[in-house]
Amino acid sequence: MAKGYWIAHVDITDPERYRQYAEAAPDVIAAHGGRFLARAGKFQQMEGSGRSRNVVTEFPSFEDAVKCWNSPGYQAARAKREGAGDVDIVIVEGV
Image (cartoon, rainbow, N blue to C red; front, side, top):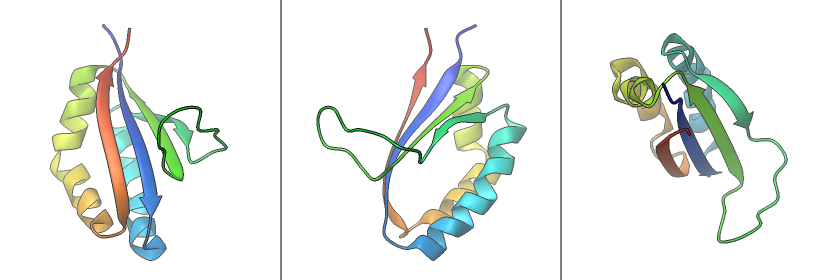
């Protein structure tokens, strides 16, 4: 079964609100089998426009990644991030 990945690109505008999200989300993600592969580390934008923070999260399957996103726990964590920045997230299936 192919793994699933969340790929997030973020510009934080309210660090305090974002911190609340960053404290709440990891436990929910882990409960769905997710683990961070990259989380705001060093990067070099090679093409196109980017954001200041990049996060890659791996899940056991695409379905697990979608279930986590839709879970009440993640949606509660996500609500803490509202207004804290500009966020693009895509869920992709691995090969």
